[in-house]
Amino acid sequence: MANRVLTQDISESLNGAKAAKIDINCGTGHLTIDKLGATEQLLARGTLQYLQKQGIPRRSANTDAGQATLALTARDLRQSGFRLPWAGCGAAYTWQIQLNPSIPSDLAVRSRGGNVKLQLAAMVVTRLSANTGGGNLAVVLPDNAANLTANHEAGAGNVEVEVGKGIVGNNTITARSGAGSVVVRLPNGVAAKISATTGMGKVIVDQRFAKIDKATYKSADYDIATTKIDIDAHSGAGNVSITTK
Image (cartoon, rainbow, N blue to C red):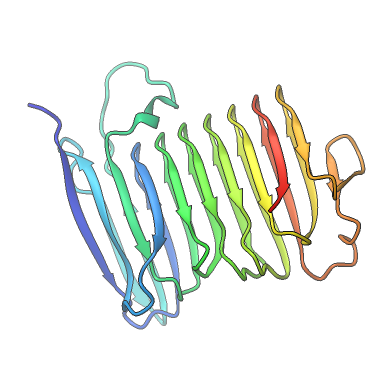
């Protein structure tokens, strides 16, 4: 019997939540996340594809004292034989999820091999962890973020991170790939200190950041700036690029 692709639709009520902790693990599938419409009174809505032999993804949701917790997890699909970690980037299914843009969210997303694309510019995200075992990772971080910690990691694919405009406070961004290229785009004029390394590729850093040692670069105003970003960017084999947009 063919392992058909099936679909589950989800719709999670806001239930008076003022903040959210959201954990999404799509297994070996692709994942895209963007925002709900501004007037929709939901925490999340989406379409989750899954293979028939997997079964319906697991879902857990509750709200307590204004704190919403949502977990979506793909069921394991047992496979025989050795499988390289990046073999899933031609994933057979996709999860498409929209999140409430006005609820401050602690967001963790994972794919074991698919591509992950996060369009968070219009959202309120307090912390982000994004990981894929073998696919590509493309993230647009929130505009007007404050004291954001955002970690991005790909086992073999490319990592692209665009920092949102209007960022304030002390912010930390990690972007790492085992083999792919790593690109971080910063708003013009933001103060930053950058650690940029690669095992085999090239390191390319915008000229407004002065090189202060073998792997560290810093803007002239970093030490006195009230808004700044610390960046750790690394690739095992690809190029690492820090640019200003």
